[in-house]
Image (cartoon, rainbow, N blue to C red; front, side, top):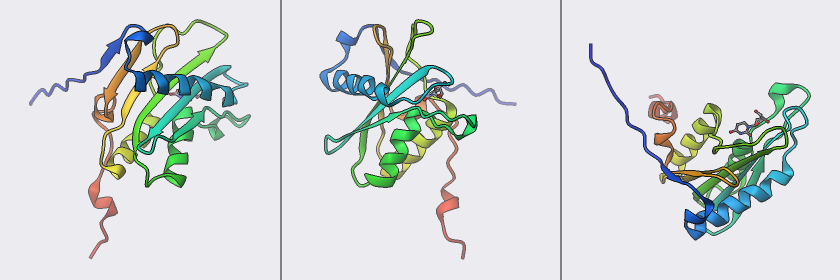
Amino acid sequence: MINHEIKIAFEEYNTFEELNDQDKHLCLEAVKALKGSHSPYSNFSVGAALRLKSGRVLYGSNQENAAYPSGLCAERVALFNWGANYADDPIEALAVTAHTAKFQISKPITPCGGCLQVLAEYEKKQEQPIRTILYCQGGAAWVTNGIESFLPFLFFEDRLVTVPV
Ligand code: THU
C-alpha cells in the first residue's frame, strides 16, 4: 500500500484593494453579471465573467428553472457561450461572485464540481491555464492560475478523442 498526498495551492487576498488592476476589473464585471441571474427558487445570485485574450468580456449568471435540474450555474453559462461562439479567442481569466439577500456571504464561493470539470475541459482545449478569481464582495478573493489546484482529480482521457484504427 502506498499513501499519496496531493498539495493544492491558492492565493488569498484579504481585501479587494490587494488585487491587481486586471483582477479587480474582472471581479467588478462578475458583479455586473449578477444582474442577469434568474434565481427565483434559491434567491442566490451568481455572476461570472470571462476575460478573453482580445480583451472581450463574456458574462454568465445562474439560470434556474421550475424543473430544477434544467437550470445551469453561472460559470457554465459563461463557459458554454465561449465554447459555442468565441473558442478561437483564448480565456485568460474567470471571476466568480455571488449575492443573496437571505444571509451574508462571508467567503468566496467555489464553483461546483460540474463547473470545474467544464473549466478543465476548456483549459485542455485551449492549451493554456485559466486564472480563476473567486471574489467575495466586501471580503476576500481566492486566486489560482489554473484548474488543477481546485480539481486535482479532474477527468480527462486523451484516447477518447483518437479515432480507432
Ligand atoms: N450556483 C452557481 O451558479 N455556481 C456555483 O458555483 C454554485 C451554485 C447556482 C446554482 C443555483 O442556481 C444557485 O447557485 C444555488 O445553488
